[in-house]
Length: 343
Ligand code: NAD
Ligand code: UDP
Ligand code: UDP
Image 1 (cartoon, helix red, strand yellow):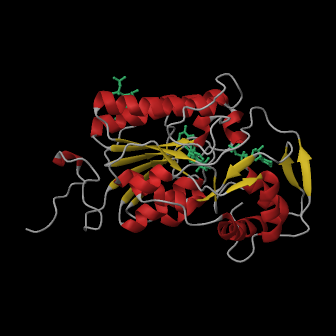
Image 2: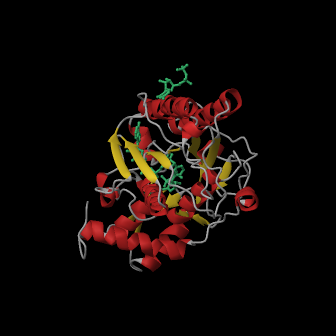
């Protein structure tokens, strides 16, 4: 027969992802840890739409069933309440490992749990990948660069991270997760992929999760002042979630381990971000200054040239184009108009 071998089957002895892109293939079986969260749920949408079977593994610390509810009843979708700090037995072709709170407010809430999630959780998912021969993608972070002394940041930069500060549970946790991924790759031959994600925003972010874009948008919609921490001159570069999901999928399907920066190089001070939110929501929105948090990185901007060259990926959606899509989602969830909210 001219049919392709069903290379998605681990038992075939083939590695996953070896079917050339563009050729028809059978759906893969994919685990998305943290799939009920902000980024994970958008990734799940794309994988389901592509024809894959998806198992979401989530402990609902910051994720919500509402984010994936529209797949309930689809036989290609499964939702498991599980904490990745505990071992997990499954048979799949690919593992997208996203489980970990991403907002500083959430990851500082129980820092030891954050470390366990990053270290023990990642170890378990790598052990799983090794046992079943699955390809494993780690969602690391631009925070591995710490308060960077190199600008913009390239993947070759080793970073400037405080090992004993209040952000360390996350920064150092992710750095260790990267180390584990590379050691499983070198030592056990696990096919790994490492993404270093820069600040990402979009629909389905937790409304009160404390990150800057969600804070400013929710505050402006509720006619509360936007809280600018410190002098507001620190910078971040904001990526729309659909660009990130495209990058994660290209990375998983491609042949390169990484790490790869995935971010939008459009860099804004927090004061400039507040202005964009004013333009988008309410020109009269007020700004209120608050003391900054400890160890806040002064600037952050990805150098994307490696992802552009090797993955053919670059972000497409500028902040002024992406923000309105997030605002209409927040409007619905805060005020419950139109389709009704799920706050
Ligand atoms: P999120 O908080 O919305 O999603 C994380 C998900 O993981 C949630 O559904 C949460 O319930 C789940 N989770 C947390 N701990 C878990 C555990 N121990 N066991 C099982 N599930 C657990 O965050 P997000 O923005 O969607 O981020 C997803 C991933 O991307 C994270 O690993 C994060 O570190 C990384 N990342 C995100 C950004 C960003 O700007 N969004 C930037 C850099 C890195
Ligand atoms: N693990 C898991 N599911 C599996 C295989 C392993 O959760 O299908 C966990 C296992 O409990 C262990 C971790 O992954 O804590 C690392 O597994 P590995 O086999 O690499 O190491 P070992 O078990 O020898 O310590
Ligand atoms: N920030 C702010 N106001 C807020 C929340 C955050 O000015 O209400 C600032 C914060 O001090 C940091 C930047 O926005 O400089 C990005 O913070 P966020 O928590 O979104 O993500 P981070 O990049 O720090 O992980």
